[in-house]
Image (cartoon, rainbow, N blue to C red; front, side, top):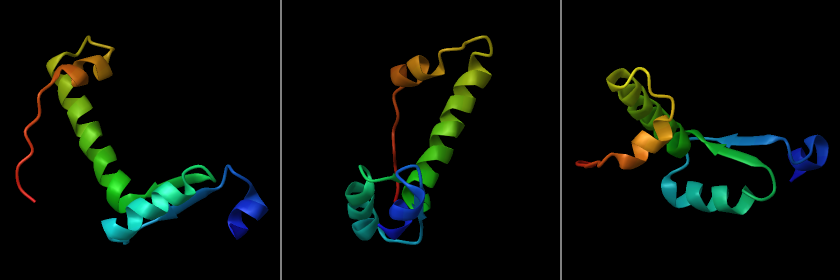
Length: 80
């Protein structure tokens, strides 16, 4: 709250190395107060989505609506 008082709601609260049991509640708690970002959760997801969008673009170089094509895909997740 001190950072928000000084920098306002546009300040970014970035944290990492929290296990998901702690990280998800922290994201939920501060979501409406300021920008929040957890590297371990959202960073991994960002890289995964970027890889998927890149693969779609490689398969369809002229396509511009990558999100529409991403929604049409079927994914299988396996492992940890």
